[in-house]
Image 1 (cartoon, rainbow, N blue to C red):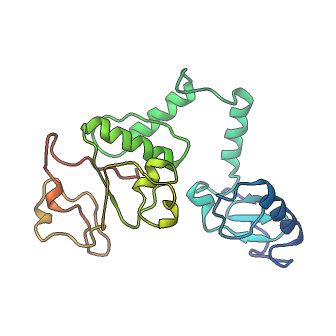
Image 2 (cartoon, rainbow, N blue to C red):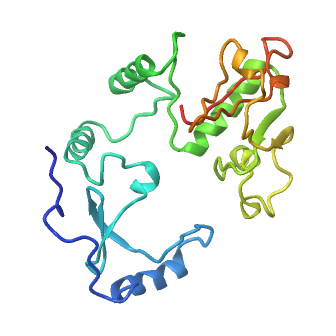
Image 3 (cartoon, helix red, strand yellow):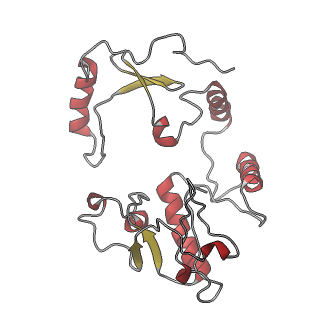
Length: 237
């Protein structure tokens, strides 16, 4: 069983006012030197972490329910992850996968392709962030379908790069002041209920519902145009 550094200590554990004195000093320096475009939600200055616990620069311990915004789902500084990073850093820091070939990149792509759901053959495109993945998906959809129009949902957030920002429909602040955005992007409400006859569709609706309900794309979008209808892009996959 994996053990982490703070398993034997009480958490949360706060011994200073928040933010503490060291954190307050760093926050003042951040205001001077770091871009104000970052949307920090709380004045937490992190020093290190282990498992689901993070420690600030004043020694206060907190439970991290965000997992690094869903990035460190194995916990902060998991020993096996740390060991893999240390091993790779001793071999090669950077290799441009767009220009050359590298065994770990090929092996990881193979594992991901074999793990991905569905019977069709898969290929992998590696990205640096979720926003970059959305940008790539938008380009791929337009290239593959030879169509320009894209449907996105109100309430969804896809990222802050231009294409991803154009698809986002969650908060106006993400888009205000950046027009014109990418054209041919149309926003609709996410379907909360399933049309009466969608249970008879073959294949079944693409979004299985929860708690007895089903949310699917309107029937009018399925089976239209060359290629059999819309090209669905699910960011969860």
